Length: 142
Image (cartoon, rainbow, N blue to C red; front, side, top):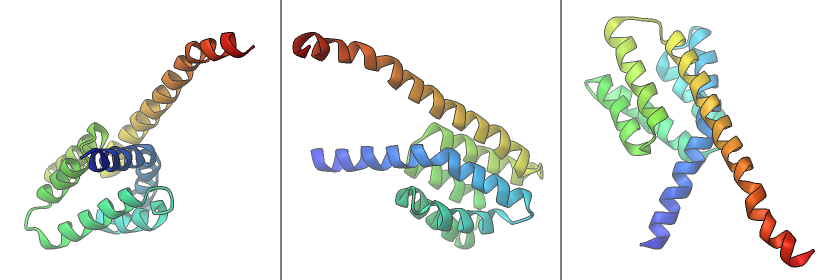
């Protein structure tokens, strides 16, 4: 049980760390005129070195987009499998963009910016927690 939980946590962290970069790549692809499916394929190829789990999710979502009757279901499945709020927001934005015919690029730009900000805040939070943790070893050993 511990092994499975550890693997799930590491997978989730891998996806979370690579997500902002993947969104930026997807934004570039969509703005250049690619369809969402082609963008997912391209991002999966490019992001595979950084996060294999995220690349697998994009490949699976791309396959679901081609065989499921409703594209909404494929996006919801992606959000459900990852369990991340940022992925859920992107999937909802994609569903709304397809339903109402709004440009996907604008929504992706806003969400990519938010994801980068969230990643930066997490890094700052870790950095702020470091000095108190280092105080005890410094007192004991120096």
